[in-house]
Amino acid sequence: MKELKEAILTRGKAINQDVLLVDSFLNHQVDPVLMCHVGEAFADFFRDKAIDRIVTIESSGIAPATFTAYALGLPLVILKKQTSRIMKGDLIQTAVRSFTKGTEYQLTVKREFLPGNERVLFIDDFLASGEAAFGAIRLVEEAGAKVAGIGIVIEKSFQSGRERLEALGIPVCSLARVRAMGPDGIEFVD
Ligand code: G4P
Image (cartoon, rainbow, N blue to C red; front, side, top):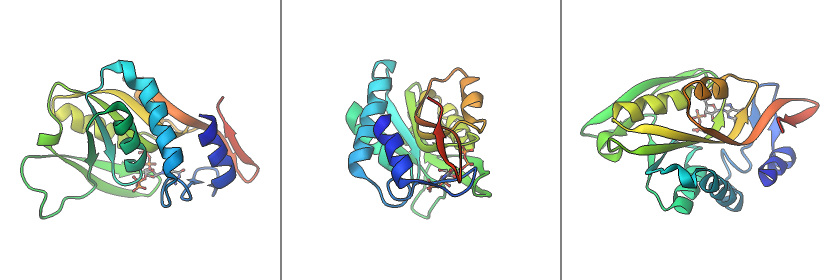
């Protein structure tokens, strides 16, 4: 997606060879016009895939997932990274380890928001090694539903996530695929 790649080049910054800072439009401040176009791009890609529901993980997946859900006219469910006193009932949980941040969290959802037998589209901001996506897949499968597609705003193609997800046979649509980055700039796959 040309507009997204331009935003990455002009408003993003490679902190080092592994981490891309895009907090001016995606992770902290959000550019709603760009996110709206991101949602439309995912909707165009997945429109004929008979999706029933969009699922994302808080927090940075919420903006692109909301616009995708709106464009497709489907409900959105936000998987939580922590429970709270008001989150009661039949919960499904799985542990997810973030390699980039060195943290672990319990990905949690109320079973009532993931009906069985549905086809789910998982949307997230970044794909690195794929741990978050695999956590979401485990929850969706535990609910009796199926992840029928994965939409990623920025894929770090030099990490293993895409390969691991494609090995499961799930279609992955990444709107920007970063081949390499560092002090000399950011290079895309296409
Ligand atoms: P993985 O799920 O693909 O294995 O990724 P990993 O564990 O390595 O990273 C998880 C967290 O780190 C996610 O944020 C993800 O968005 C973020 N992340 C990974 N690579 C980058 C990067 O190059 N730049 C930035 N800005 N973030 C990156 P999170 O913990 O879920 O945080 P948030 O959604 O609350 O923002």
